Length: 65
Image 1 (tube, one colour):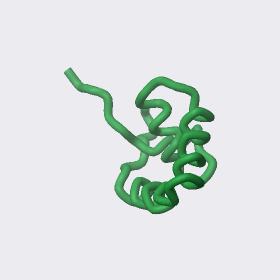
Image 2: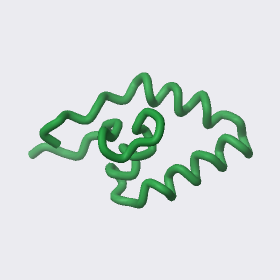
Image 3: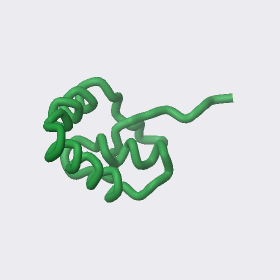
């Protein structure tokens, strides 16, 4: 049995698809993830670095998914 895997989204993306991929993984609206990420950037300032790291580390979603 294959479990869920975290991928960058090819269809729901604004920059690199990180927020869209996280939203698909947790089955929530991607707008909520984007708002949460924006809050992290504004409040803590670490959200930008985390987004860049996720964009580099997370694999692309395959075409057949």
